[in-house]
Amino acid sequence: MSELQRLKGLLPPEMQSWVFVEAAAAVDPALITLEEIGRDEVEIQVDLDAWDSLALDYRNLLFWHEVGRIQNDTIPRDGWEMAALAIGLGGAIGELWVQDGLLLIMALGLSGFAGYRLYLKNNAEKRLRDAIAADERAIDLACRFGYSVPNAYKSLGGALKDLVEKTRKKKKRGFYEDRLEALRKSAGKARAEMAQQQGSRQSVTSENVYG
Image (cartoon, rainbow, N blue to C red; front, side, top):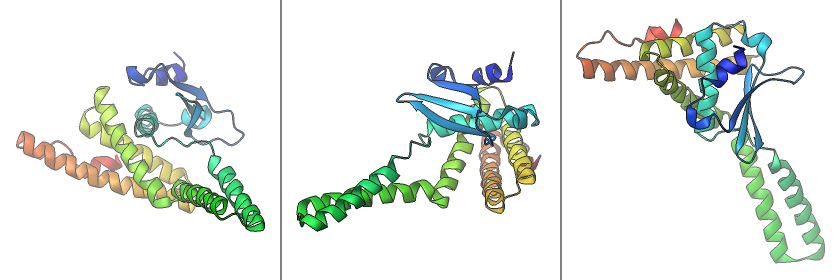
């Protein structure tokens, strides 16, 4: 079985008809990313050369992170905002020339909405929140596919730690470090919940996040 076929098998059954897994074709691709390829279809693209160097459990949890992004509807959409912003600004300039107040307000409204969407798309804090939410989804999916809670946290934490060590760009490395810190806190909460349920504190430890 090829790696792409194996990953396809890690999709929840309800997603297998509309989510596809393909090798990345870009010149300098990301390790793993998403692309909306149709109105109701999503493609997960994997850089197989870099991907194969990761441990199997790391690959699984990073893959489920992307699945979690799909489930949370945080897929990158086509960049219509830039086009809308240009149209809105162009329209505003044109309406200033002809002095049509209503059309000017409409053009400014379009450019304002497009600008706000661009802000949200590029906002670092929102990107981090979305990534942390997808990490939580990845833990849930791992447990659904047979991982114990401690092993799910340990595998995702190990994968993020590996990415931190391999990433040269400071901003991107910091992004992974922030996800690791959030995962550590989440593991602590899971430990407390399981201890309360089982009457023991031997289940999940924050240290598991770091392998």
